[in-house]
Structure formats: structure tokens, C-alpha cells
Length: 239
Image (cartoon, rainbow, N blue to C red; front, side, top):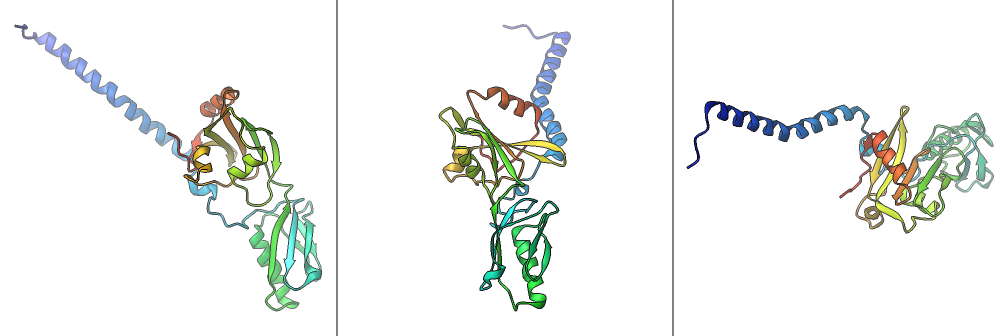
């Protein structure tokens, strides 16, 4: 028969039990604390503009625009360039500030100006023929890494396609999008395989985003991303 523990022995067991409970609770407390500290650095998925309208592209200097005014050929242009000041020059209405507006906003602005004096209920369409102001960098395990111009609304799949697609060494479950918000760089990690299979949303890319596709030859880059950048959700499905 085992001897009953002495008073000192009982205290020892109680102390060990308390330490064990503290060890179990410590990761939970740490996780909550780390989460609270990270909250100001997180971006909500809605900020990635996944549901942004098709024409919602922010125009910048040197962009070339395709402008159509229905049934008015002299007011339609294929490559109207935005000048360095952000303006375009159009017949009848003269200078129109385009930079900083979305294509839909510029459509309404031109239509309003034409409707004031010249046309009744003008129908105007604006699209981006060539973008010079917004670029995306795609690197890592893709066939042709580099810097690419965005032409209007561009998704992650389209950005990777511009780089020739992923190569055989790519880890499709680890594709990072690095984005700056108010001077702070953040990384979003997504499951590109799920996106390509239609099981996850295909998020929109913004100007100056950097896309990094993980794989066997970019482990150092990937490690630096994970260690040094706060992570925000990109409708990702990491398993």
C-alpha cells in the first residue's frame, strides 16, 4: 500500500498542479494579447475591394483612356492621355480633371458637363486603354517574374497570369500579397489553389502591390514576409 503524502508532499503536488494549469493557459493568454496588439494593423477583407465594380479603376497621370460618347463620333477617342497634372482635354467642354477619379466617376463628370449645354442625356463610357500609373510586382515561383502595368480591374489570378503563371515548384497554398496602407506594409496570405479551383474569391490587386508565390527557391523571402510583416486576411483558406 502506498504511503499517504506528508503535508509538505501535498503542498508540492498542489504547486505542480498550479504550474501545470498555468502552462496550459499561457498560450491562450499570449494568443489573446498578441491578437489585441495586432488589431490596429489588420485590414478587413472588405478593404481589398473584392466586390468593387468592374469600372472602378482609379485613374492616374499618363494613363490612356478610351472614351465613347454614344452617337457622337467626334467626341469619342481611343487613347486620350491623362497629362502630368491629371487632366484631359475634350472638345466643347475643354479641360477635365481625371486623375483621382474612377472610370465611372469620370463618365458621370463628362456626361454632366456635356449635358449642361451641348447634349441631351448624353451616354458616356470610359475605360482604361493603357495604365501607366499603376503597377504590380510578381515574384517567386512564377515563369516570368517582373513588374506589370495594371489595365483596369485586375485580380490575383490575372496578375499571376501576366507573369506567365506559376511554375512547377510553386506552393499554391502560400501566395502572399504585400500592400501598403498609410505607410505600413502588410502581407495577406491566400490559398491560390482554392482560388483557381473556384473555392475561394479571387481578390483584386491594387497599384504597387507585390505578389510573392512561395516555393522551394524562395523560402528565405517567404520567411522574411512571415517574420517581418503583419498579416491581414485576403479571403484566404490556409489549411
